Length: 89
Length: 153
Image 1 (spheres, chains in turn blue, red):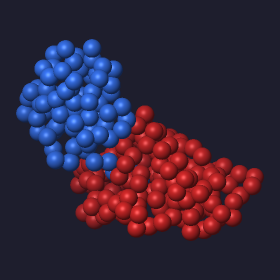
Image 2 (cartoon, one colour):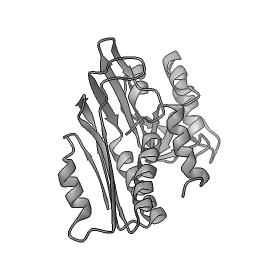
Image 3 (cartoon, rainbow over the protein chains, first blue to last red):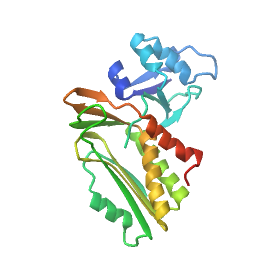
Image 4 (tube, rainbow over the protein chains, first blue to last red):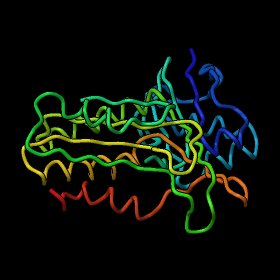
């Protein structure tokens, strides 16, 4: 019962991790209410650096390679990425 | 009608030949972006491009297909580099083939404006003053928004 978390750019640097598995069993949530906001809240408990990084107002969340809002539901096997606004081109 | 993510420099002539093929449409437009040697604030000597490979491929594929539908393209191509790039090297190339020049040129502009804000790439500039992540620009977001509002055909 896990999802893959990916971090990019300044977030990856600030948190010192680029990818890891997150066990969903450890996360407290109401039935059918496991969304991106719940995952963010759970990761924010890891410390001030995580809380600051994941609560930046312009943070982008991508679930299975698609940008989503924090109310997107998360399921086992999903890939959830957090990163700053994109600067391609 | 394809996307290429690559570390190596973009061979612009080869990309053009591939885009046009044996039977060119009436209008072919391309855009190539190169690494600038400066920003508003500092001199730039090198650019590192981080990317999210699986998502970048997916986003750019969808962008190309969207451009093809919106501008009736018979052919399109998006090439984006990643890794460490030096000043004056290519970063990105887009190309579009259509029956009319307006569609071909608009398609290139649409693809560029969209990929700047929607494709998961992050630039880190290096210069004499040090390294820093490039912040997203309001002007890029505004250019992207024009297409969403339908102000441009």
